[in-house]
View 1 (cartoon, rainbow, N blue to C red):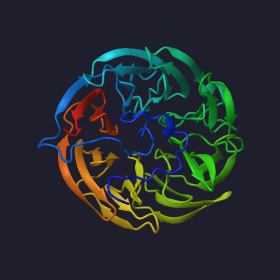
View 2: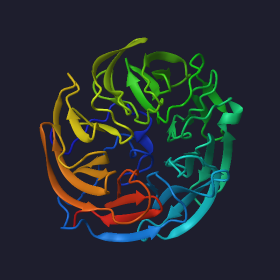
View 3: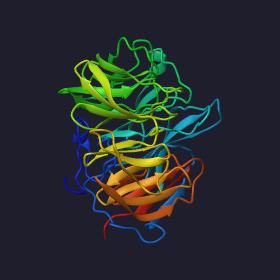
Length: 408
């Protein structure tokens, strides 16, 4: 497979509404960290690409922006520990100017209280899930709240150590949320009305910060997600549990979305020393075919590209062969780093010091091409890089900037 091409497996129902150049949801329009359809610079000038604009938002967040239909949408939160409120901002992506803003729900206000989830845009509707379990649908034209559901109240949800943090998965007129209630670990709501379509029955586990994936395994479309004790697969149409695989670290924290890495194989990784696994799913059974405790990805994301797995864990960004779990190489200078992969290379954003790199990655090696540092904002460098319509967007707390990375 030639460089610059990608393998997009099992995301039926997600790709159809994504417009070329937009980034319509967390992990990109195809929910896979792969950027396509962009013509980008092969390298950056010394000191980084041209900064188009930089703004300080009036609210704080770890979430990444999304760009759709000529508008940049981003969440943030304000207030104290007991009265934290989530805000949705609509910005001009060319200038960073705020067009409008709206409160969407109460937000998580305890430890790590910044807003942590990104919106998902489908047509003229936008969906966001708050840290206390509220699921909200808003108009992209002015931010009018079209419906709002307190999923924890309706489905006996139970909160977790650092609040709900699943980014909305929307497909077939449904939005998935994970209140973690008895017989309602995972719930599908009607995307037009917020009414219940299905709920998982028989799991009874709380959410574990994982944003679910829509994948095809054994020829069957499934919602695949990590709950506090298990990785699970649910029938996408009915929510019926199909299989589960024991997977728990000491804090039940599993923010990394499961990634399909071959026919009926999944890569999962969790921090706190739990490590990474490749899982083979056959019918109603799932078994581990490879594991490595030293590569414990806390929450920086995983991608499958050109037949390789890329995952940040154990203080390094590694390239794995999914056939046997062999570490093929590591990316020099990338430690605990989030990333996306573009036609010009992987763009990394490191938690430690805010280093940003452009890296050409191939199945058997890589080359660091350009580097610079994020020198603005507040708090940890925990947002992921976003590329849309020739611009790179990087967020740190209240700080947000756009860089010109399009080919001239």
